[in-house]
Length: 411
Image (cartoon, rainbow, N blue to C red; front, side, top):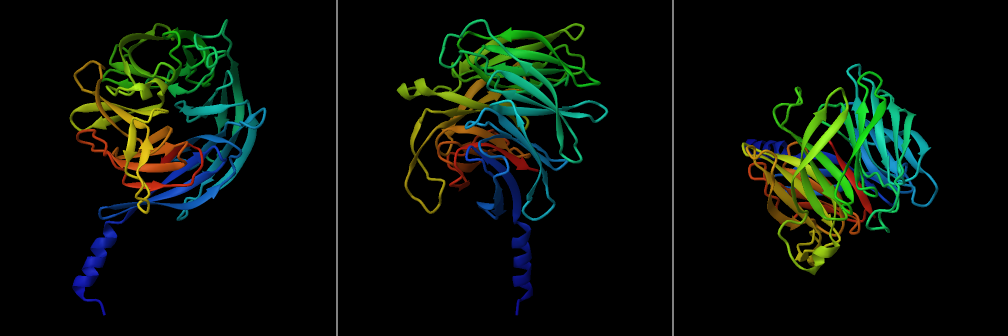
């Protein structure tokens, strides 16, 4: 028999249990569904299910949480083409995926973005590392898609690092805060390619590209908004992560009249790994950049750094394994609210293993999931939303995922 005290205790314990799903893509071709549970002070990652519907080389996930759609890019490393696959997220306990459509697309898709118009028309743009940008119309209800536009890029000669910059390598698609422009960092051409988005048809019109420092190798960027977006008179900043130069560069954003394009004025440049030193830094290859809010104090940039094990002995994310591991890094830079976009290095912390190709913050901003390509694992770190500090040790992890390429929270 349970006493009233025991029952009350059980109810109280049950009320502290929460769970959140993550979808994780891997270059093995799988999409794995992980469940993060939180009971009292304990977090745990467990596997719910996996599908190989995005095989052979799943490289990027794009989730539409409201419409319950998940899109997966397959980089197609073993064939002449890549592929795009869409799924509906089922309303069940595991968030199982129902395959809707799988289609071949141009080779090496590595990143995507969804954009819409006021009428609810929805498109997806895809960056292809093999010189192209493609777009697809989406049906938000069914998750079906249809090819729409294709842009193939060229460059007159190789860049300074010929083995990496022999041809254009579009690496990301990002929509600006006004929803009028699309920016595509091109690692091979040292360009930011700019497109105007027609507000009715969502067709793209290429505008003047923005050249960055030769040999930079721009990979990913992110916009940060001030208080005056609608009038386009300032307060918008763009932060660019350069893979080859291993730098973070800050720009002020202005807009040319008559929908003529975007202009960027550089105001700051810093090493992607902050103030760390040593020969290991020479191999650093930053991968992802994000912005997170700090309550009452502005925001911060977060950068993942690969191929530079600044941490040689950190706690193993596997609670059953006491053997310390080597780790690449995560760097944070503060963005004070009154600093006109300037940033300051704050912290360098372990990434939880090797080659953090991608990371993602949950909606509250207090948890950071890191996908470690060479370690084949996902780790979760706690982040303080009041200070922006990221814990040195992970609170949960999951092993055996193969070459993790991206991850998204289902929330």
